[in-house]
Image (spheres, rainbow, N blue to C red):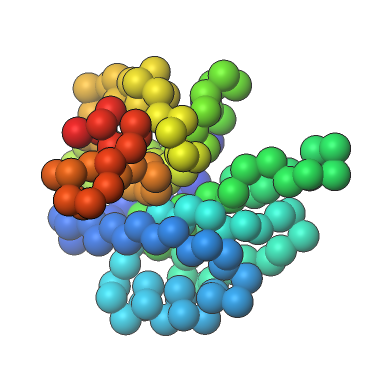
Amino acid sequence: MMSEQNTKITKRGQLNILTWNARGLKNKCNELFKTLIEEKIDVACLQETLLTSKNRLYHQSYCIIRRDRILVDNKYNGHGLAILIKRDIKFKVHKDPPPNTKAEFIGIQILNNKNFPINIYSIYIPGNKLRYPDLDHLINSNQPVVIAGDYNAKHHSWDKYNENTNGKRLA
């Protein structure tokens, strides 16, 4: 299920999306928010936030959807994800990912001024854990989709010196 946020529909007709692997967000929030404002970013997809529920993340101009790291048996599970959406954009939050997925992801659905939905996901895939069913779950709809994130993928098409399983699967 999706939960709808009480925000307005965007009128501009274009969406500026940023994706960033923060590799820890705690000490980088000022830099992040400065960039979002200066670059007029509508949606930011963050990976490896390394945040837990104890960490506060707030900005008056953005709604923030998070999937934090969880402490299980004295060990943190996951790397943490976030999507930041300008408060004047109407969106819904996608339900949690299936339990058997190897990928970490969170998603939203944005309704533009013509009520034409766009699905946006922030995704983190640990090294060599990319599986087609994980992506199929996100892609299989008749709506446009943006899957922004860290795939831990290397391939000769974009890195002539390195290649790995995730890169071969994406290419």
